[in-house]
Length: 354
Image 1 (tube, rainbow, N blue to C red):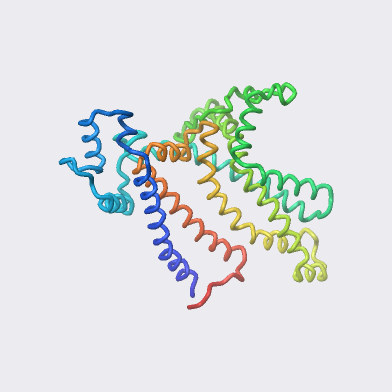
Image 2 (cartoon, rainbow, N blue to C red):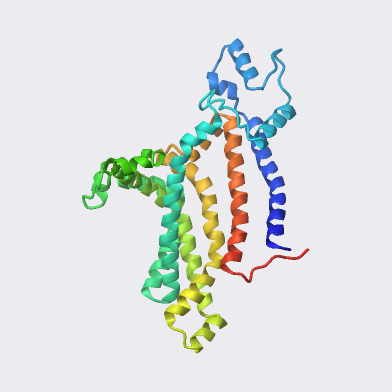
């Protein structure tokens, strides 16, 4: 089987997963205890207003009869698969789902960008360093740190970090995090105007750079929390992969040939040690999807994660369904990308023939 035939097969097999995931969300939200009309109108609504809203949402016919669940499901799936996401029911009534997601996406992208950077540029180097220096104090320290970071729950770490940084002058020997470099709050949503208008940075770099520094400082605590689990995993698995690679036959052969240690490390050890890290790195996106809901809520970041949480609580089916639809597509795409990266890092990886 060729590479492209394999990827085409994976795409076809992804369709049932996509349909199952979106269907499950519809069942949980629509058959649950939340009434979208009551969420819009509040408790004890006027019956006439209730009926009018129910008709507008497609939950009830103009004659007062409830629309069958199967009909609601068909309409729901048809809209998703044709990318007709419609309008929000509760969060921002009569506002297009695309515009709501677009307004919240920069916050989550900014959080995810720094979360991935922290995990990659701290976790992997420390893991490789520990693996190249086994049974030393550096190895013990890095390994212990990786276990601690991996073991700490995100919700606990988020709450602790908010408490400590909000009163850092009392805990960190007078160091005030909120006034460090620039004045910011720990619990706030960063201003990302410089992302929406990159040309402004060229025209007026001074204020734009200050905004960039403030936005970076505001997002770092949340990014540290969100990237902590991946950082610990990468550190632990990176160390193990380096140790296994160093003791392999081809590395011993390279040493016997007299290759310089630096060449052995870069050409043989690091590249092969990256192979088991591929699923860990790609899995960081899954952490961002699930973890951003909690982290954005604790740090009051108005991103997609917090939007998803609010939409579920209010029974905003078009918004929940659309976000879930995108999350599933992202997850399936990353799984396929993971297989592709395997073939790039290790050309020996092949595909089963039919």
